[in-house]
Length: 294
Length: 284
Image (cartoon, rainbow over all chains, first blue to last red; front, side, top):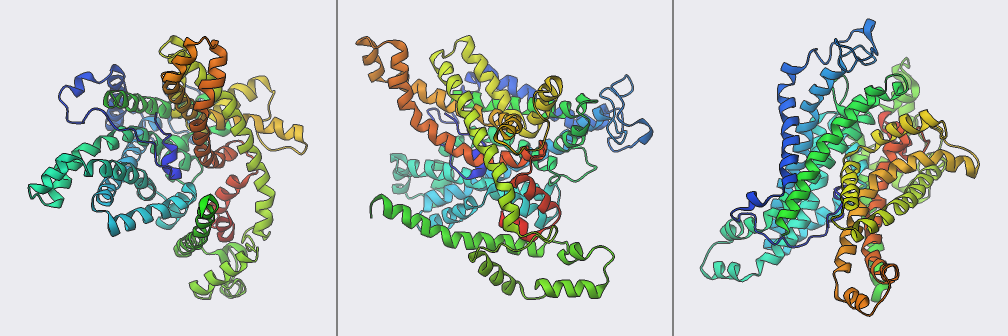
């Protein structure tokens, strides 16, 4: 059973079931279900589009042409033009260069921070645990979206602020998952054996504990990227995310909404782009889980 | 101590936390650019006018003094006045909270109506085509941004059939229910996949347990078995999940209120945040 990624931002730790297969086991990649590869293919396509956007895109995504605004799709403009006459197809491609990095960083950074802090809290216990986990409680006490709004306003609108806000919020979930796992592993025989053999704490943590708990982070990460991307799009839609004129899928949907009856493709297509990416990542997440939970 | 002691202790812990939260929000909004005095006095106001407004609002006092005064007022139930609309924040919240409660209530109702049957079918027909279809739809639903789903529903349902209004909120109960349906459905589409997933997993593990086999072997009929034994035991975790989702619904509500132009709390918050309206943001 998985927990909604949304829970990450409401501060509820996902239910953890112990993984049955250690992450380093040989042949694990070969046993990955097919859906993982389908998902990887989809995500790779998005990454490729983001990288090649300047080459593929027929127009400058910011070039306005008021005389030719809200045009219907044609050979010149594959998806027509927006309210300022900008080419929607080009903007769609360029938006991948905004949404992908923010979605990925907005999930990777909290994953790294939360994994390390959770491992420290679980392994060292006592005041380290108290400081880290009480901080986590405080972060959770905030209504998530208010915290993001407040942080974005304090740091100024833009990609950097959004990523910082996501990191401040989402590390908590990883910390809780990993702390629980470390508590479980910490008292296993081989860890005691390592202690008896005279290994230092940091080495035990790094070599013997960490590799056995990290898979929890990896299983949770793809769903978290989906949620970071959706959250970014939502904040941009509300006008609190990436400021105009930068092309961003959520902002494009907001641009297109007033013209939904006449130019339905305008708001529809950027949403499909988000759904496609989310679907690819969700397939990876489900596949990982099947493979690792045995 | 017992259960009540635990609850009481928890509630007491909430109080310092609330003060902390108000303090952080207060500090952050203090250091952000944007001058509330300019907002009130207008663009053409002279420097003297601005100074006068600042003085009357107490904006020249130290941050600590302002915070102390704010907390003092809040404790007495006074949330201050919106800089922009000059209305008391408490009354703005009062006007708007009803809409948000409607949206969340109707949303939760639809979540239950959608997820319970689909989760049950999916679990009972595990790995059959219908299960694959439900899970596939779930993956799509999870990946759809709620505000986009709203736009699509407006396009496909409201525009083509004309059965539902495309925005706003009504006066009578019937009108309200009519206006809230599409926004609530949007909310339900965003949340149901998670509940369906959880319920399915929970039901499958119950179905595999020994007492169900026993029930089968002594001849309890299928539908009765599902209702009396499976569903009842899978319901607990399901309800927990729905409670977790309720927190998420609040964020969903903010976005969806904007899509459907519903005059609720979320929309008010976004408008206030865009306009740097300190007291309004803090109140929420």
